[in-house]
Length: 299
Image (cartoon, rainbow, N blue to C red; front, side, top):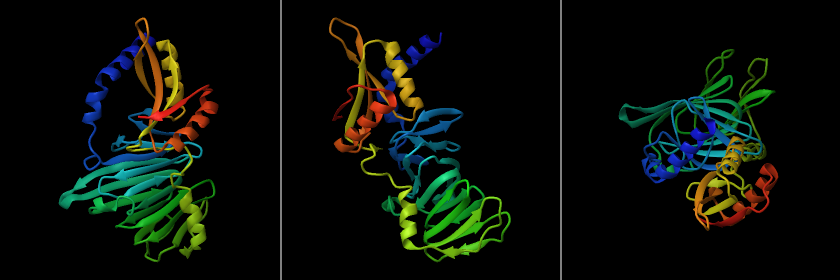
Protein backbone atom coordinates (compact mmCIF):
# COMPACT_ATOMS: atom_id res chain seq x y z
CA UNK A 1 0.00 0.00 0.00
CA UNK A 2 2.87 2.34 0.85
CA UNK A 3 4.55 1.81 -2.54
CA UNK A 4 1.23 2.34 -4.32
CA UNK A 5 0.70 5.64 -2.47
CA UNK A 6 4.20 6.86 -3.25
CA UNK A 7 3.79 5.97 -6.91
CA UNK A 8 0.54 7.91 -7.00
CA UNK A 9 2.20 10.93 -5.39
CA UNK A 10 5.06 10.78 -7.87
CA UNK A 11 2.64 10.69 -10.79
CA UNK A 12 0.60 13.54 -9.34
CA UNK A 13 3.72 15.65 -8.84
CA UNK A 14 4.81 15.07 -12.43
CA UNK A 15 1.41 16.02 -13.82
CA UNK A 16 0.97 19.10 -11.66
CA UNK A 17 4.48 20.48 -11.40
CA UNK A 18 3.89 23.20 -14.00
CA UNK A 19 0.68 24.36 -12.35
CA UNK A 20 2.17 24.35 -8.86
CA UNK A 21 5.21 26.29 -9.97
CA UNK A 22 2.92 29.08 -11.13
CA UNK A 23 0.86 28.91 -7.94
CA UNK A 24 3.79 29.62 -5.57
CA UNK A 25 3.49 33.23 -4.36
CA UNK A 26 6.17 35.56 -5.72
CA UNK A 27 8.81 36.85 -3.33
CA UNK A 28 7.09 40.21 -2.76
CA UNK A 29 3.89 38.49 -1.60
CA UNK A 30 5.21 35.58 0.47
CA UNK A 31 6.19 36.22 4.09
CA UNK A 32 9.60 34.67 3.51
CA UNK A 33 11.32 33.06 0.52
CA UNK A 34 14.46 30.93 0.45
CA UNK A 35 17.13 32.57 -1.71
CA UNK A 36 20.21 30.34 -1.35
CA UNK A 37 21.02 27.03 0.33
CA UNK A 38 24.33 25.43 1.15
CA UNK A 39 22.96 21.95 1.78
CA UNK A 40 22.07 19.95 3.81
CA UNK A 41 19.08 21.88 5.12
CA UNK A 42 15.40 21.23 5.80
CA UNK A 43 12.10 22.92 6.53
CA UNK A 44 9.47 21.46 8.85
CA UNK A 45 5.86 22.41 8.16
CA UNK A 46 3.06 20.92 10.24
CA UNK A 47 5.43 18.24 11.44
CA UNK A 48 6.55 17.17 7.95
CA UNK A 49 10.24 17.61 7.10
CA UNK A 50 11.39 18.35 3.54
CA UNK A 51 14.74 19.49 2.12
CA UNK A 52 15.06 23.24 1.72
CA UNK A 53 15.41 24.61 -1.80
CA UNK A 54 15.64 28.05 -3.47
CA UNK A 55 12.32 29.71 -4.20
CA UNK A 56 10.55 27.89 -1.39
CA UNK A 57 7.89 30.13 0.19
CA UNK A 58 8.07 29.78 3.97
CA UNK A 59 4.99 30.10 6.14
CA UNK A 60 4.17 31.12 9.67
CA UNK A 61 5.36 28.53 12.23
CA UNK A 62 7.73 26.86 9.81
CA UNK A 63 10.99 25.57 11.26
CA UNK A 64 14.25 25.79 9.29
CA UNK A 65 17.11 23.46 10.18
CA UNK A 66 20.65 23.20 8.84
CA UNK A 67 23.17 20.38 8.97
CA UNK A 68 26.94 20.26 9.20
CA UNK A 69 28.76 22.94 7.15
CA UNK A 70 25.43 24.30 5.88
CA UNK A 71 24.23 27.86 5.28
CA UNK A 72 20.85 29.40 4.36
CA UNK A 73 19.85 32.84 3.06
CA UNK A 74 16.17 33.81 3.41
CA UNK A 75 14.48 36.96 2.10
CA UNK A 76 11.73 38.38 4.30
CA UNK A 77 8.77 40.11 2.71
CA UNK A 78 9.76 43.66 3.60
CA UNK A 79 13.25 43.30 2.12
CA UNK A 80 15.47 42.23 5.01
CA UNK A 81 17.56 39.07 5.01
CA UNK A 82 17.97 36.22 7.48
CA UNK A 83 21.15 34.12 7.38
CA UNK A 84 21.74 30.84 9.19
CA UNK A 85 24.95 28.94 9.88
CA UNK A 86 25.51 25.24 10.34
CA UNK A 87 23.60 23.02 12.78
CA UNK A 88 21.06 25.78 13.38
CA UNK A 89 17.35 25.82 14.17
CA UNK A 90 15.12 28.80 13.37
CA UNK A 91 11.39 29.00 14.07
CA UNK A 92 9.43 31.57 12.04
CA UNK A 93 6.57 32.99 14.09
CA UNK A 94 4.18 35.95 13.95
CA UNK A 95 4.83 36.49 10.23
CA UNK A 96 2.36 38.99 8.86
CA UNK A 97 1.41 42.57 8.11
CA UNK A 98 -0.27 45.05 10.38
CA UNK A 99 -1.79 48.44 9.59
CA UNK A 100 0.31 50.95 7.64
CA UNK A 101 2.05 48.01 5.91
CA UNK A 102 4.36 47.21 8.81
CA UNK A 103 5.87 43.74 8.50
CA UNK A 104 5.98 41.66 11.68
CA UNK A 105 8.02 38.62 12.64
CA UNK A 106 9.23 36.77 15.72
CA UNK A 107 12.37 34.83 14.82
CA UNK A 108 13.28 32.20 17.39
CA UNK A 109 16.83 30.86 17.11
CA UNK A 110 17.11 27.78 19.31
CA UNK A 111 20.71 27.02 18.34
CA UNK A 112 23.41 27.94 15.88
CA UNK A 113 24.60 31.21 14.32
CA UNK A 114 22.17 33.77 12.91
CA UNK A 115 22.30 37.13 11.17
CA UNK A 116 19.57 39.65 10.45
CA UNK A 117 20.60 42.30 7.94
CA UNK A 118 18.99 44.92 5.73
CA UNK A 119 21.67 45.37 3.06
CA UNK A 120 21.13 42.27 0.88
CA UNK A 121 17.74 43.08 -0.68
CA UNK A 122 17.81 46.78 0.18
CA UNK A 123 15.66 48.02 -2.71
CA UNK A 124 12.63 46.16 -1.33
CA UNK A 125 12.71 47.51 2.21
CA UNK A 126 9.53 48.55 4.00
CA UNK A 127 8.65 49.23 7.64
CA UNK A 128 9.20 46.35 10.06
CA UNK A 129 8.61 45.28 13.64
CA UNK A 130 10.82 42.24 14.17
CA UNK A 131 11.88 40.51 17.35
CA UNK A 132 14.70 37.98 17.42
CA UNK A 133 15.10 35.54 20.29
CA UNK A 134 18.45 33.81 20.47
CA UNK A 135 17.82 31.14 23.12
CA UNK A 136 17.54 33.24 26.30
CA UNK A 137 18.13 36.71 24.77
CA UNK A 138 15.41 38.70 23.00
CA UNK A 139 16.29 41.61 20.71
CA UNK A 140 13.79 44.11 19.34
CA UNK A 141 14.84 45.31 15.89
CA UNK A 142 14.02 48.60 14.24
CA UNK A 143 15.92 48.62 10.95
CA UNK A 144 19.35 47.29 11.85
CA UNK A 145 22.02 44.64 11.38
CA UNK A 146 22.85 42.10 14.06
CA UNK A 147 24.60 38.77 14.49
CA UNK A 148 23.95 36.25 17.21
CA UNK A 149 24.52 32.66 18.22
CA UNK A 150 23.58 30.05 20.78
CA UNK A 151 25.80 27.08 21.65
CA UNK A 152 26.62 24.92 24.65
CA UNK A 153 28.62 27.70 26.30
CA UNK A 154 26.68 30.94 25.79
CA UNK A 155 23.99 32.98 24.08
CA UNK A 156 25.26 36.10 22.33
CA UNK A 157 23.98 39.10 20.35
CA UNK A 158 26.30 41.51 18.57
CA UNK A 159 25.04 44.78 17.08
CA UNK A 160 26.72 45.50 13.75
CA UNK A 161 24.74 48.61 12.81
CA UNK A 162 21.65 50.50 13.94
CA UNK A 163 19.87 50.11 17.27
CA UNK A 164 18.36 47.25 19.23
CA UNK A 165 16.69 46.70 22.58
CA UNK A 166 17.77 43.52 24.37
CA UNK A 167 16.38 41.83 27.42
CA UNK A 168 16.91 38.69 29.47
CA UNK A 169 14.84 37.24 32.35
CA UNK A 170 17.72 37.90 34.78
CA UNK A 171 18.51 41.43 33.63
CA UNK A 172 16.98 44.83 32.96
CA UNK A 173 16.09 46.02 29.46
CA UNK A 174 19.12 47.42 27.70
CA UNK A 175 19.41 49.73 24.68
CA UNK A 176 22.31 49.11 22.32
CA UNK A 177 23.29 51.66 19.67
CA UNK A 178 27.07 51.39 19.45
CA UNK A 179 28.30 49.40 16.47
CA UNK A 180 30.26 46.27 17.44
CA UNK A 181 28.78 46.19 20.93
CA UNK A 182 27.69 42.78 22.18
CA UNK A 183 25.62 41.21 24.95
CA UNK A 184 26.45 37.74 26.20
CA UNK A 185 24.84 35.32 28.64
CA UNK A 186 26.99 32.33 29.68
CA UNK A 187 24.99 29.13 30.10
CA UNK A 188 23.83 28.75 33.70
CA UNK A 189 25.09 32.22 34.68
CA UNK A 190 23.86 35.80 34.83
CA UNK A 191 24.17 38.14 31.81
CA UNK A 192 27.42 40.05 31.48
CA UNK A 193 27.59 43.83 30.93
CA UNK A 194 27.43 45.07 27.36
CA UNK A 195 30.94 45.08 25.88
CA UNK A 196 32.66 45.82 22.59
CA UNK A 197 34.27 43.42 20.16
CA UNK A 198 37.20 43.66 17.75
CA UNK A 199 36.28 44.01 14.04
CA UNK A 200 38.39 40.97 13.18
CA UNK A 201 36.29 38.84 15.53
CA UNK A 202 33.14 40.17 13.87
CA UNK A 203 34.48 39.11 10.47
CA UNK A 204 35.05 35.61 11.80
CA UNK A 205 31.56 35.48 13.30
CA UNK A 206 29.98 36.81 10.11
CA UNK A 207 31.67 34.13 8.00
CA UNK A 208 29.73 31.52 9.98
CA UNK A 209 26.47 32.68 8.38
CA UNK A 210 27.61 33.47 4.82
CA UNK A 211 26.90 31.09 1.94
CA UNK A 212 30.36 29.98 0.86
CA UNK A 213 31.64 29.95 -2.70
CA UNK A 214 32.95 26.52 -3.60
CA UNK A 215 30.51 24.69 -1.31
CA UNK A 216 28.16 23.38 -4.01
CA UNK A 217 25.33 25.76 -3.11
CA UNK A 218 22.03 26.31 -4.90
CA UNK A 219 20.54 29.73 -5.52
CA UNK A 220 17.26 31.15 -6.74
CA UNK A 221 17.62 31.52 -10.51
CA UNK A 222 20.69 29.27 -10.73
CA UNK A 223 21.19 27.94 -14.28
CA UNK A 224 23.06 24.69 -13.65
CA UNK A 225 21.86 21.23 -12.70
CA UNK A 226 23.39 18.04 -11.41
CA UNK A 227 21.99 14.73 -12.58
CA UNK A 228 22.73 12.24 -9.82
CA UNK A 229 21.72 9.13 -11.74
CA UNK A 230 19.34 7.74 -14.37
CA UNK A 231 17.48 4.76 -12.90
CA UNK A 232 15.54 2.12 -14.79
CA UNK A 233 13.17 0.95 -12.04
CA UNK A 234 10.73 3.32 -10.42
CA UNK A 235 11.19 1.66 -7.04
CA UNK A 236 14.96 2.23 -7.23
CA UNK A 237 14.39 5.86 -8.25
CA UNK A 238 12.10 6.44 -5.30
CA UNK A 239 14.57 4.78 -2.94
CA UNK A 240 17.40 7.12 -4.00
CA UNK A 241 15.02 10.08 -3.97
CA UNK A 242 13.95 9.34 -0.39
CA UNK A 243 17.53 8.82 0.77
CA UNK A 244 18.81 12.04 -0.78
CA UNK A 245 15.97 14.17 0.53
CA UNK A 246 16.18 12.70 4.02
CA UNK A 247 19.86 13.70 3.98
CA UNK A 248 18.85 17.33 3.27
CA UNK A 249 19.44 17.54 -0.49
CA UNK A 250 16.63 18.93 -2.68
CA UNK A 251 16.53 16.19 -5.30
CA UNK A 252 13.73 15.89 -7.87
CA UNK A 253 12.70 13.14 -10.30
CA UNK A 254 12.09 13.59 -14.03
CA UNK A 255 10.81 10.65 -16.16
CA UNK A 256 12.48 10.11 -19.52
CA UNK A 257 11.04 7.92 -22.30
CA UNK A 258 13.13 4.81 -22.79
CA UNK A 259 13.85 3.04 -26.06
CA UNK A 260 11.28 0.31 -26.61
CA UNK A 261 8.68 2.06 -24.43
CA UNK A 262 8.35 2.78 -20.78
CA UNK A 263 10.37 5.26 -18.76
CA UNK A 264 13.68 5.79 -17.05
CA UNK A 265 13.98 8.18 -14.12
CA UNK A 266 16.48 11.02 -13.86
CA UNK A 267 17.27 12.22 -10.33
CA UNK A 268 18.62 15.74 -10.26
CA UNK A 269 19.43 18.84 -8.24
CA UNK A 270 18.64 22.12 -10.03
CA UNK A 271 19.32 25.86 -9.50
CA UNK A 272 23.02 25.42 -8.84
CA UNK A 273 24.72 28.80 -8.81
CA UNK A 274 27.44 27.94 -11.34
CA UNK A 275 29.15 25.08 -13.13
CA UNK A 276 31.88 25.12 -10.50
CA UNK A 277 29.33 24.79 -7.69
CA UNK A 278 27.66 21.89 -9.51
CA UNK A 279 30.99 20.08 -9.80
CA UNK A 280 31.65 20.55 -6.09
CA UNK A 281 28.22 19.18 -5.20
CA UNK A 282 28.78 16.20 -7.50
CA UNK A 283 31.92 15.26 -5.59
CA UNK A 284 30.17 15.72 -2.27
CA UNK A 285 27.21 13.54 -3.22
CA UNK A 286 29.46 10.82 -4.63
CA UNK A 287 30.58 10.26 -1.05
CA UNK A 288 27.31 11.04 0.75
CA UNK A 289 25.04 8.93 -1.46
CA UNK A 290 27.50 6.50 -3.04
CA UNK A 291 26.99 7.80 -6.60
CA UNK A 292 29.18 6.70 -9.50
CA UNK A 293 28.92 9.21 -12.36
CA UNK A 294 26.82 12.34 -11.64
CA UNK A 295 26.51 14.63 -14.67
CA UNK A 296 26.76 18.45 -14.66
CA UNK A 297 24.85 20.38 -17.36
CA UNK A 298 23.01 23.64 -17.90
CA UNK A 299 19.30 23.57 -17.12
